[in-house]
Image (cartoon, rainbow, N blue to C red):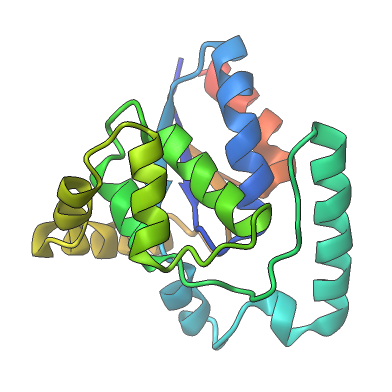
Length: 197
């Protein structure tokens, strides 16, 4: 059975329900998850965008907000439209990158998304990220220092470059043995693909 790489960006709206759904779905299927934070900014820039396509194309944005509200209600996920979009998830991505191999990464990721899309908190702030880490029983000062190290910053840059090399153009994306699946609605398909490998 192949592992499933979960490529996510903290500003990504549809990555929010995917992050909440992926744990139970993969556990029930016996599929291992590899957490892969990356940055959409450089990928969007390469496509000629300087903002989220949901802001660039207002009709698409209006649809997305209503669709996300429906999805969260369907899956019992807390939801409140953020007062600012997109929020800067760089620090959160650096933290997730630094703890990607640790058991707490999944719960950290879910709590950051919850802070942004259910509590309307400013996830770019170190105090918000520190409070999430503290709530997980993690030494926030140590984790933040490791996340801001030159080595970890380079790791996140390399991971974003790898996302582009894999053909990832949006989030959430799932990769199984080089096969790309894009979007929250492709999560089950990606899991089945992993189970069949």
